[in-house]
Amino acid sequence: MQTTTVTAQGIVCGGCAKAVKAAVSAVPGVAGVEVEVAEKRVTVTHDGRVTKAAIEDTLKRAGFQPA
Ligand SMILES: [Cu+2]
Image 1 (tube, rainbow, N blue to C red):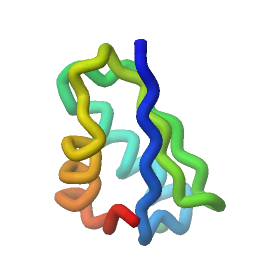
Image 2: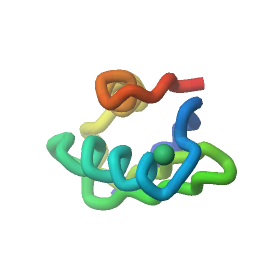
Image 3: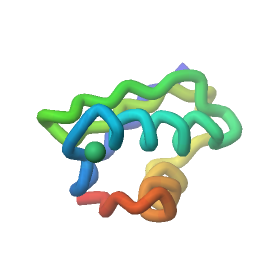
């Protein structure tokens, strides 16, 4: 397992965290998603085939702007 961390603007509450988790969890290869709202940080555990760019694209599609 590998871990990739990205930050994104617009993550401001638990609802956002849920939306981020749902969107990123759907990416093939993702095993776990942790969201720290205060830091606007998303930590993704995956099998190695998930790129940072793929996570950022997913966040954009969900309405969050990667920093
Ligand atoms: Cu929110």
